[in-house]
Image (cartoon, rainbow, N blue to C red; front, top):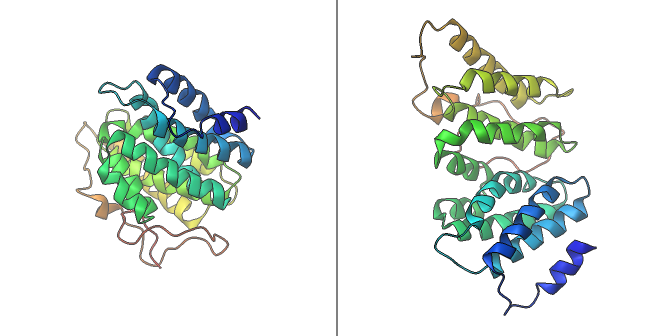
Length: 247
């Protein structure tokens, strides 16, 4: 009810929200993206977009950090089984990337290239790959298969970028534990498990810090015959992305 009332109040296009109020609203809305109720998710995501549209522009806007934190949750909600939630998430991502002036992320959003968006998001700041990977782990337990599958793909991309980082082995171990909890793992899940296990073994056997690192995403391509499971009817990854499952 509160979300509905706030959404109604913010319909005034001439309204401007001071940055301090916008920050408090945005911070309060983020946890609601994860709620089990899809209607609550929809309202919170739509309201988040409205807050970004009406927020007062400042050079050092305190909203920047919160908006950056929203990108991964919104990306995963973009795979939601509820079409309204999925589209609202894409619209919110467009608002967020405009707010952050991330033109590199806007093109895959407009073209609806999900995994290209994920790669661009991670490539912008490889040092945060481990942090992003940890944020994605809880979504492997989602009751929605398309969302779990998106989280698995995201883990694969993050795993490549994390190679050579100090905490790589620790984060890979956490990811493997989460991946193994899936009672009906997809072929993609199993394939990434295999890659992560092999990489973990390399790290454990390495006499020093210099463990070979793939030169590019191409070294982590899915086999050409691998595709999503037959029962998976969610949107396929965009052709040409590193972790796309090619048919």
